[in-house]
Length: 328
Image (cartoon, rainbow, N blue to C red; front, side):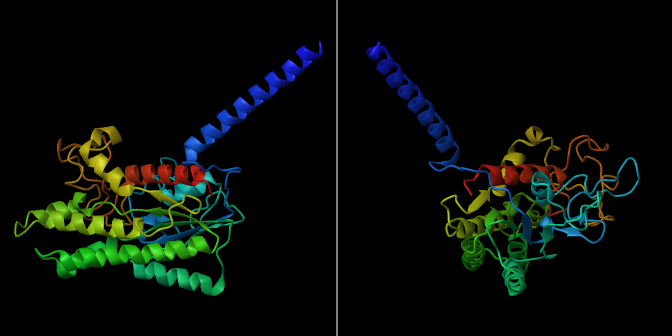
């Protein structure tokens, strides 16, 4: 009897140990060897970057494709949310200029700049730290770099890309330094890569000039920016989460139907020129160029350089997923 009792205790320890090992294996498989003991839930959301992350004015207009409510006939900022809204909504946080339910606390804060660059993010972060501090309850969202690439390209495009590519790598490195400083101050950060701007309608139009390979130049500048940023951020997974927008856009161009997008989605954009961003809505879209009829599928790009609502939604889902699964 004593033997049976002892055998039972041994068997129980074996089963318990196997269960614990299995649980640790599952957790490790989700986090590359590290795991969250408790899910991170931010008390505050802070957004830095350019207009692609911005809600503009009292109506919360987007530099993407806004949507008009079937009920009110007015633009509704809660429809076609941009990526920052998707993350905020996931955590129950609210932006002051998109608060239809009258939430008392507006704890999602927009620090973005129209036409913003890395230099603007540096300035905005410094201004924030002049009157506040980052802490362990903050989630910081950052997406910038598109305007750095376009500004440099418009000013200095040439067949010799050496200087432009190095400049973009340096800008990416500067952004990484800012991201690292925020993370070292205690906040958690979600950072996005820039899309390969050679896939934009702007690049498609530029390529028609035929003087040199302008699409390749824009692609190499985009890649250099992302390399500069990615190779210099803290990458242990405990403080910073990365969303690969360049991969997402590349895949969407290769297989637009898989993303619910129109064919040749990098050659045209949705918004009529008479409705420039951020005034464009689902009622001011051009027809699908392949059919000449109102588009059934989504436009990948809202205008020549800004992504439309479908890709904004995809980015938001990935960003929220990274924030939830990262071992913050």
